[in-house]
Length: 176
Image (cartoon, rainbow, N blue to C red; front, top):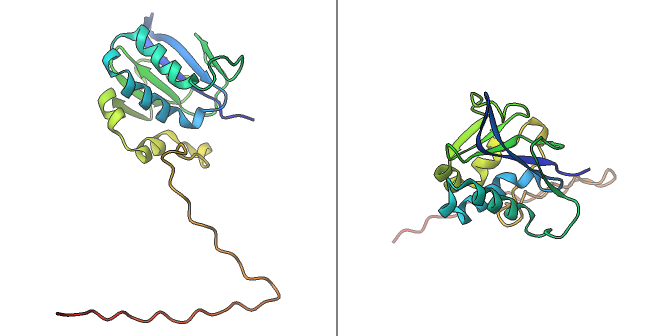
C-alpha cells in the first residue's frame, strides 16, 4: 500500500536527456501538485537558483517527517510510482506532468504544462484534473482545500415501503 509519487527536478542536461534529481514520496503522491505549488510560492525568490529551489521543494515534501528513516527519498533514478511524474524544470521555469519515462525527454511536453507563475496561480481543481489519470479516480484535494462530497442517498429497507414526500409548494413573488 501507499501513495507513491515522484517529482523530477531538472537543473540541466546530460547528452540528449534532461538531468536532475527525483524526489520520492511513499505516502503523498496524490498531493504532489499542491506540495510543489506551495514550495514554488514560498521559494519564488529562488526561481532559477536550482540548488536552493530543489531544497525548498524537498523540504516542503518532508516537512512533517524530517527525522524519519522512511517515507521519502532522493535519487538520480525514479523510485516506485503510481502517478504522473511532476517535472519541475528550473532551467525553463516550467512545471509539467508526464507519464513515467517521458519526464527525462526534453521533447516530451507532458500531459499538462505551466510556467511557474501559471502553476502557482492555478486553481486546485484545475491542477487535480490535469494530474489525475484514469487510475487516480479516488484522488482528492488536500484536506485544507477539499470540498465535501454529497452524502449517498439511503435506499429504503426491503420490508418497508418508501415514504412519499409532500410536493413542494411554489413560493409567491412579493411585489412592492
